[in-house]
Image 1: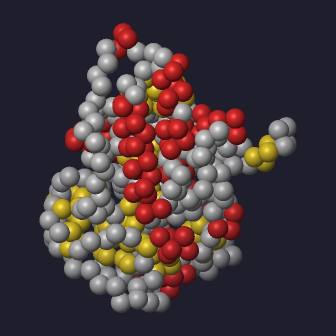
Image 2: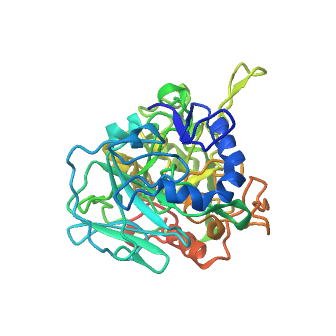
Length: 426
């Protein structure tokens, strides 16, 4: 399924449960927006029809049946070939997916969700647009306050995950739950979608389904005793650079152009220049094809080169890694950590440009990727009628005054024992 499919409700001339399939995400999301008001008015009536029980596909408003029936015809198909997982209660903290106690704990915050389904993918199924396994969470067992959680015993070396979150859709009240979307966990440590920079997904899709990496317990990186350099700020000679742009040209003469490893190859050159700090322009996961369209003036296609449109703040930009999506993103994380370690060996600090004032989801016309579908009114600053305040100038404004969002930002910056690849301690 190379195209994005959205479930649409009763438009004139369309039967109930009709599905719009489009490789143009803007067309798809625009249709959903137009349906918002109608969806809100008829929410309860549709919900009574579409509700098929906790073990079924909860796609209210899509007119679908169970996973064995019409589930594969809407959104992302479901593949369940006898896979079985024991689902335990789990813990509400820490947020995200955490390898611990012989399994993985999943925890995600959603204030007004009525149901949450954990969706698991193999890498091959994700690339086909197929959900490998759906695990509906029991609100009586797997919920504490506003946090949904579950523990899956075992090791999941080659699995990815996302969430379907159901709840009332009422844009004027700031609620934009859409159970036809599979959402990224904001705390996912690696995000997998397209593997090669600038290359369209299957069927020419700029926005193929994304999923987070399920962690494994023994994914250790050898820091070789590395510690933060803590150079005095007044002594820094900072070289600001773009990870891809720095080595992508043939003149760089590196083995891995445009990647973290390519930068490692040029560290000696920077040291010779007297540089003792590099400031990396955004290298958290973003979509360089976000504005992909033909530019007749230049005779090529528009790309988001700079990366100031973050999808996920915990994940390194996968397509800056020579390994791409290899090992479900773990190799990309190791490449980034290697860059930091090797820079420190040469007396070079690593600073990161992280933009927490907005995300790639844009305004009310933007895509639902993660934050919007999980807790729109928590993660974004909203006007009284549900519109997005645009103080950032990029469509939305991250609601940094909210305690959940403040915690999220601090968690992003925290770097205990170098477990995570980001800011503090570099």
